[in-house]
Length: 402
Image (cartoon, rainbow, N blue to C red):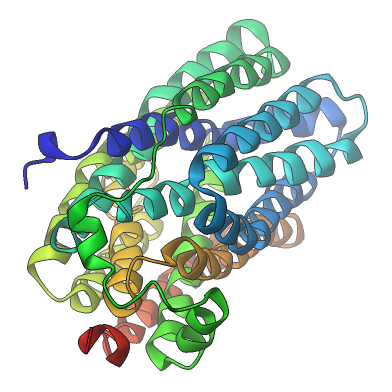
């Protein structure tokens, strides 16, 4: 199926992810100005972002259940409201501790309603199973385009008007998510309904029990934990790491923008590879690539050129895990409760994100260096590559006999 023949809902989901994740991935460039404004160390802002990611994940299974029961339309709209409120309160607060509520809890709730789990769960219901990984890859790539588009704009707003005004512009952008959500109709197509034969009688509780008794499901959790650790450590601390190496702020914004633009191609590439080859082997290859890229970046001298090359290389394997992971969950358990089952996996991802964002600041404040945490990410990437090999990715017996 050509991507141009995908249902309208796929393209609406792309618009939502461009906005939601574009804003989210820009938070790293706010670390130094916000830390200086409130006269706190880097660990304080790091913990606020870590809390955001932990709550993002903690809310996700319940938000996924609500989306499976009530549909994604209402969930996305209400989440965008929470997102906007959190950003606005962040911009006007005079107390540093308020960041835990605004940037942490409210934005975390908003993200859980407006990002991959809910959008991909809706997409899974309207796209045939044989084209799911491609559709997931295309949708995932959208979040990266948002990163490429939003981060340079955020840097410009912050330099010309201040970080508070940049946050307020982001709050206004959340109205785009609200508008797009109004047209999110998740009624299944015939092909989607056919893919669901034999699944409708299964209850939510039975679906969760079935997944929890599957060894491969927990290996998927473990691999996605590593992904979360990588993504939020790099997104949160790369700007500060480059500043410590005496590179200008523009180089950090450009490196993150390269992450975004190359992830557009990478997410789609890994999604297509997941349709053509065994997803678990493709996932192992992705993590091996991360191992080499991160090790090379830490070993080589840090310059504007190497920062840009790193952004491009890590971007190519940045969120390629999303279409592969969600595709594996759908392949094994079906699409009926994908928002719930993938939401639970995503919670584990966000535990990794929490540790990556917080530990980066903690280790820096303790050692005065990011080197120990960088090498930890290399080791974790290699372990994740090994974890995916023994996954049993055959559909469960319930689907095989349907």
